Image (cartoon, rainbow, N blue to C red; front, side, top):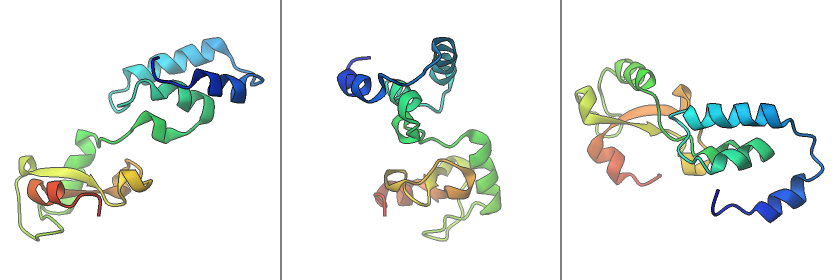
Length: 120
């Protein structure tokens, strides 16, 4: 994978006891996972365990539907009702600030509010 600091990884992990077959299996699983946005982050994740390198940022459809229903279609910012298609899933604690992509950290915002809030 281009752009990775392979020398750094080698120096930090050269003495790690790794199972090539297990690593290969995990690589295949993560490449097939639609939520993993950064495929090049897979290798760093497998070596360091740092989940952020995978860029897991999108909420799945089931989660979005559940949160929409829980909010009764009301945007928590402008307090107006919207159809599901007029809303977007958003991290309550921003992903950039360490917020995880999990149902407890999700709310549905109208598109206007989601696109104008900029990580606040």
